Length: 357
Image (cartoon, rainbow, N blue to C red):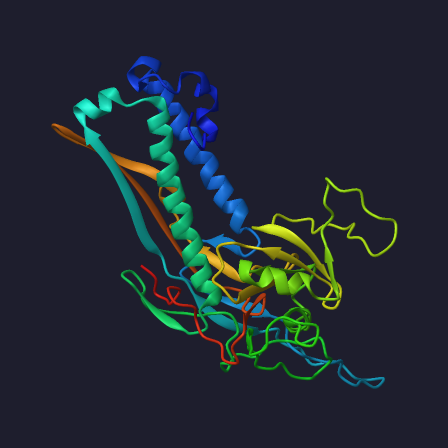
């Protein structure tokens, strides 16, 4: 029995040990097509908290202006204003692929289970590539240039990184303010050094952000997070809860990658463990904010998503090619925040520098 049975192969569960040629090449091909389609939807759902798709290579993120009413008398008429606040953002688009192949004889002997295992490996490779590029766009705090063959050099922006861009605040000020959403603290997570409060405040202070604050943390931060006095653990469905003490009864209401750990009362925010995050880092966002990132893809539907694109026969060999074309960059630059715990200086974690291969 295959360790992971893909969606399209569930109808073939009783014939996994049979050869593909016995079951039918068209039947197995249908299972592959269905599995790839479900994979693309799963990837979209998984990243939906952070990402919205776009086909634009460069655009402007438009914001309201900071204005107040103009004084008038009986004969007065207000002067027209222009709402023209914005900052420019650009998006890369990178291509990646994977191929698998066999000899003619090995192909004839291939079982349905082997086909499922090969496709599982290919789809996992796509998920890994997408996830790593998304994390690089979140964790990287430096601008970088992408050489676009059609549009020239594109300046790809990170989240707010203390550059000259100004952002609106809820504090009633007459002007916007520069900002950085990359934080670092030398102390570990403790009651006197709770990073969730700082990250949550940095998100809530901007009028474009709304909803619940969600923190995704690296696994090595779980124990110290649960030790916070302000932390309420999620309910265990296998344990009857005592009638005394605080209990977590709410829910986030959106799809969040990772495992729900509980709720931090001090910052009024949810905490999830996301096993793919590097040690000592946590990423925070809000559930009803404009997405912090955009994913650029080609305008042609045939080039969107992850798909098998070609087959090649060169006797005695046969191969199949899969491709993905995508790229990530900041959109709402104050729509997420990243915190490094255990070091007073923020640094991009090793392996997540842009541009990523």
